[in-house]
Length: 208
Ligand SMILES: CSC[C@@H](O)[C@@H](O)C(=O)COP(=O)(O)O
Ligand SMILES: [Zn+2]
Image 1 (cartoon, rainbow, N blue to C red):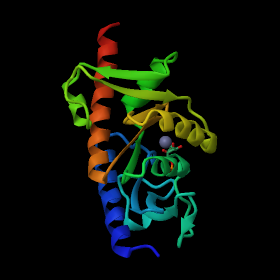
Image 2 (cartoon, helix red, strand yellow):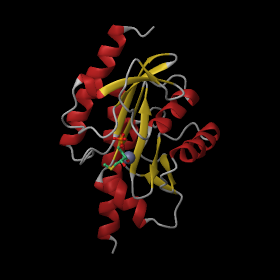
Image 3 (cartoon, rainbow, N blue to C red):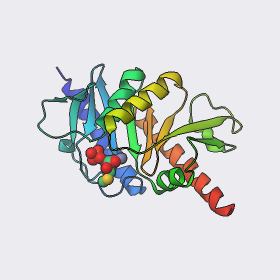
């Protein structure tokens, strides 16, 4: 049984997150998907194709950790497997957010031969637990974009099983995934990473 209060709280947090992320320009044109944990076996996740700046409670549904809808006839995000794989791996996370910002999209394409981005010498790195100084490194792997979400999910599962300290990842020409203990935490990570990626893009422009 799904706890109705947990579901309602998760759904409202995702609706609010959508308004914020769309407002920042990081979830344009129905792109992006967001989820929040309801209990050990279920998450609330955005319905596929919905405008993230105008989400209503009915645009958030429940799936189990195998991505199967629970008490819903709507279609969960096409990228649900990229969420469920993270909840399976990181038992302490409570939310996953995927954005489609200009910085994440352009930077991951511009660095076409690279399989990771290393962020260093930015004070804002301290937004991540365990990073006490700008001299530490925040690293994000870059996976190739694919319409085969099952195989992309498996690729991410294998990577993060070995590299649990990475706070998120990029899909080339597509966007960013990050997670956190709560929706609030996850939003902080999203905002920090989007800021750092925008800085990197700006640095690259200045270096030309
Ligand atoms: C509108 S293009 C973006 C989609 O292809 C996808 O990458 C995305 O982020 C949203 O898919 P969705 O099925 O709505 O969760
Ligand atoms: Zn996407």
